[in-house]
Amino acid sequence: MMKHVGDLHYDTMAASPFPVKCSLVFASHTGPVHYARYNSTGEYVLTGGQDRTVKLWNPESGLCIKTYEGHGKEVLGVSITQDHSRFASCGGDRQVFMFDVTTARTIRRFEGHQHRVNTVDFNQEGTVIASGSYDSTVRLWDCRGNSRLPIQILEEAKDSVASLQVSQYEIVTGSVDGNIRIYDLRVGALLQDLISHPVTSVCFSGDGNCVLASSLDSTIRLMDKDNGGLLNEFKGHKNSLYKIQSCLSNYDLHVISGSEDGRIYIWDLLEGKLLSTIKEAHGGVITCVAHHPRQPMMVSTSVDGTAKVWK
Image (cartoon, rainbow, N blue to C red; front, top):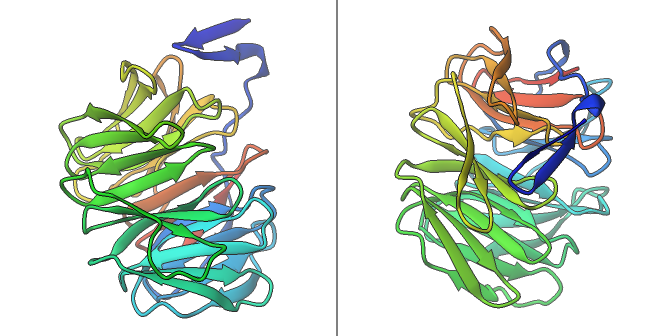
């Protein structure tokens, strides 16, 4: 049976179960954990924390494989190349680092932002890094050349750029100025949708037709990427003060978000119905949830100093 929302189509018979049972607690960071990201195969997780480190760990065993140091302040965002060889990280020291995953060596360090860097992402080829900052800009950095200057600066935001994601030829950004912006790098076009509340988390749907956006009115919205139409809203969680990175499940069947009350909420994407609430998932604000790219698993991070794997 097929259902559709806008240009999204789903086989409802193929619905996968959603993860609600904690299988592992990772407690190697000191202080709040701000962000988590699976690599493209889901074999390992990278987390960034208040302790200025990025840690690579096995989500099955919980073993911390490597710790990456270099940032002078908290780490707020991480992105991994598709071939797993490098990752980028950003944070309160206004810098973007590019590390070699295997050797833990700093390959490059990009400087130029005037304030903390909230979010970072590679393009699909791993040749360009996009970074979004409290200074209201998005900067694009060339990973291949030796120039320390950005190849482009996007200055349309009027307040902090809290979240971004890079697709094959587009960049979606969420800003505290209340706007979602989509830059089409092929033709130099900009689409802008006003949410009227600070937007702190954005991501593309799996097929690239929609954008999921969290804002500080305790609402998550599914937006049509091309015309800005509102396709669905997801409510029930608490999110009015902190940036909480939400996500879609690997087949775009579910919307998942943490909450300021320490719970994780899971909604049906098509119906907007709240399917499950994981109570007392963490002992504080949940900062990020990231879904496994292939399996019904996810990882969550929190100010309580832990990351947890859910199956």
